[in-house]
Length: 276
Image (spheres, rainbow, N blue to C red):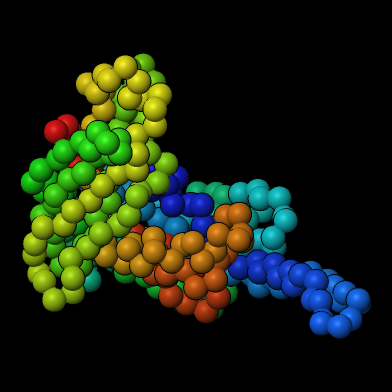
């Protein structure tokens, strides 16, 4: 999952607190408070709904204590009942295919411009999420900033959407290489329904721009359900924890609701690669 590759340096529910030595003035004694391991098991939901692509399903796992060795065979959940609803009417049941992954019985292509809701149940506790799948973003212009080695673009922004950009290196037989993360996720002010939004990529690494040959370099723009912007802006709140999709992260802007449930159920679309 491309976006989770970019964003999955983040998730939530083992909290490891270490209070370092406290030194009191006028006293040579040092009080050391031992680490406290506070663990609470949460259901973790993650799914990408990519416009015009086959839906890969919803992954249901549980968070693990910090320091625990991650294994999908132990983290994946099976005691889940789930389905998705499209535009408030079409119901698509999800079936357990192993290791926490639940998929439709038949291939289903995600429809751009549609709303999707997730309904799930884990031991009687309901889980809910809703997302919008934007259409492919309209890119009005692209430029390359040679002084700082990044691509910049202007996108026709719409209400309830947010945008990010990634540089792309076409490596021939190896396929495409893209940036590991977005530089930022941008959106229109809430008072506007439509307008220009400026996006930029991370700097292109030197090995992909050596010799000044830019013919293999381009940019893609991602159009997200606006809920992704809050997640992106808050994912660093879990950075003390190695991977918040495994252990969790405090105050991260998940869009999944439910008792002891966290996660990201997010719709997005991707533009074709474009050059200046």
